Image (cartoon, rainbow, N blue to C red; front, side, top):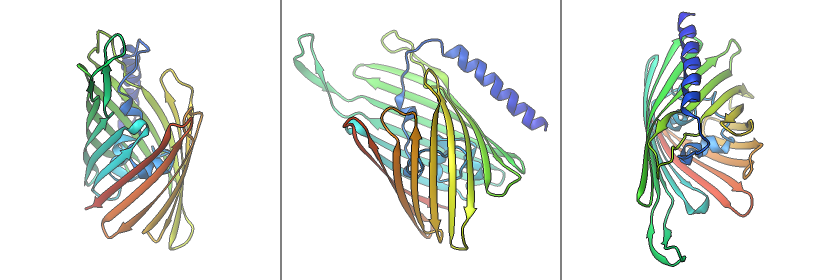
Length: 300
């Protein structure tokens, strides 16, 4: 009980700190809002309360502790506007503790540099990099807590900004078998100015649920949802389904409500011994194109 009270106090302090650090509407580091994992994206990113591969640490730092195995995962994201995102993540389970490390690299591609008359005089290559160190711990038989410490870099032409951020999360394995609840606060932090402008992180709050149902000895169905509040935006809802057959074949569906440019997503995965391959497909509206994500991971 004392541990739970301490965690609640920690979250309350984080709210007050995040409010004091977010006093302008200039927002950057959009890489923090882009999903990297095909498994998570295939389920509509309704994943705050689920276990998963190592990329789960980017969605809820506490979920690394409820994952069954240590895991390494590499993923590639062919995003809109020909942006390319690479992610490498690692979680190591140690009993009631787990440790993780992740890096995300966003390459915006080539952008023409022009003078005042619009004449092309060169080119530049904007990039974003995020490095996260994860720690998660089971503090009771039904409650896990986790945190990410993140270092960020954003470079646009000759201008750069650097930042430091924190994510906080909890997962509750409820009294009902297969039912999880989660609460997450992400992107609390600060950054240096870019062109003398203060850059805010996209502060995010999540409440998630997941229920895993055994349909038969060979198949399982996972139903999940995330209620999400991005600062300065309306509340959004993510919904996800995953059907698993024999622990080898996985199919996924996701749907996002109250988003401007996306809603439906789907994906599949397969497992061979300790190796997993996952793919997801997300169509964007207004001719923005389609997003393809791939990953390969290894349990150990």
